Image 1 (cartoon, rainbow, N blue to C red):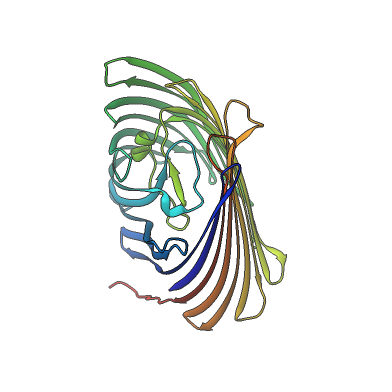
Image 2 (image 1 turned 90 degrees about the horizontal axis):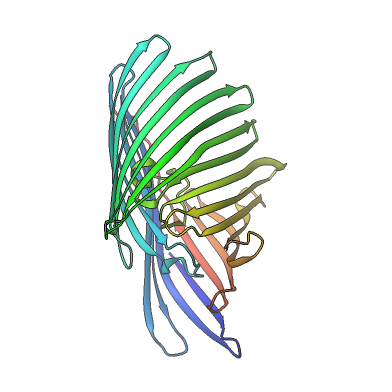
Length: 406
């Protein structure tokens, strides 16, 4: 449960509009894991309901949001067959634009299902054929979309720590009466090192796009990825590069739902693009005896296969936590997102978010916190700059159930 005061300022050029809204709200999340033989289930869902009153005109408004994912999988090493089911609910926005209030995004539900069968041509080789299907249901201005991917994966163990393979797939998708077919092939190599892991992939993708008017467009791209992770007892660093040809509808069956523990705040809707992205992250508890630090930065270049337009996307985050006492904790977080067009050095749309919170443990599963959020929206587009400040008092009650399945 929480109560908050939100103050928003909008720059109108010659004047500034301000409004202050007190609010009451309820938020919560539930998560769990179940493992029984070859069956596993993981889920985490969270939601917020908030009612606000504008002190200027007395108008009462209500905001609600929900985000989460669940995943069921069946995998038995002694069996040739495996299958999975998944559900994801997330906030979605279009290609450009930010808002200071996350509840202003549209909501999208996605259902996923897939199955595979494995063969063993030799003691060191595995061949798997699989199919994955995904369908999304959007609210607001979002369109329903769907896709299906058929794939074959051949892998061979090269040593105790390394393996190589070949992945081939074909995807069919439909979004707003636009049909896209993508064929992909990739060579993959992975090596488990003493201090982390290394993975490398290289290949090509080719896409055919059929518009509602019957016009057919062909696209192709060299694709690949490179991942290097360093792991120690109290820190972890990773560098990831990825180049791919895809669109949001195809990703419904190409990608599994987001990591249950790290569900993104918002997901973008994209047309068919060739994307190059690099992500660098570092997390450590070595900063001091009572603090931890997390850093991440990502940059991406996206070229639309439909319009030829090139855009640049950037994001960065810093999270710092300090344990004041055994019952008190101080946390600071900063997130930045920016968009640029053809000129990578000119950011045309960006948002800064700061969060400072003090948490006091009242009992084993009960805590009280004071949180101060700031958001600054800056744009070179034909829109107004915005600033928002939120002071929130929160009382949290948790629970946990741990059991051993029979």
